[in-house]
Amino acid sequence: MDPGILVPIVLFGGAAVVLWKYFEGRHKERMAMIEKGVNPADFKSATPFRLWQGSVLSNLKWGLLFVFAGIGLLVGQQLEYYFGFHEETAIFGSILIAGGLALIIFYLIAAKKLKDKQEVEK
Image (cartoon, rainbow, N blue to C red; front, top):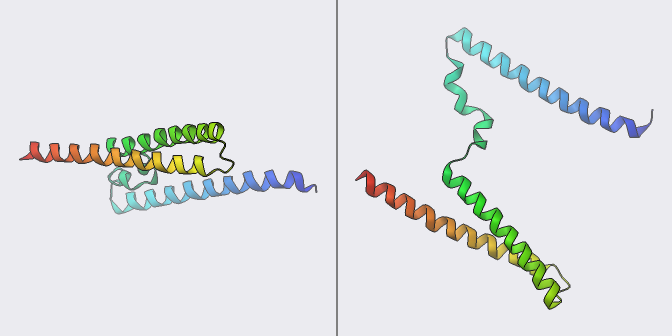
């Protein structure tokens, strides 16, 4: 058999087996919970997909980080182009500086929101 055809078969077959075992295990777990009299809906927050639903501040943090990292990438490329840097240090450094700046801005925004929330609760 040609090894070029074997790779996609193994790749997709492996992914199918993993998905099958995941859903089979989830089904068995839910059936066991129903047999014990526990409501499976009470455990929805324990699913791994809950991790994808971040808070507003978490979304703000990642948004700021990616926007500033993109700006850092553009600034680094411009520094490399106009000032003749032949290494990627300008790009890498600009991304890190902009990312750090984004996290500092996020910290200031989150601290202010937390302080406002504590004042409202008092």
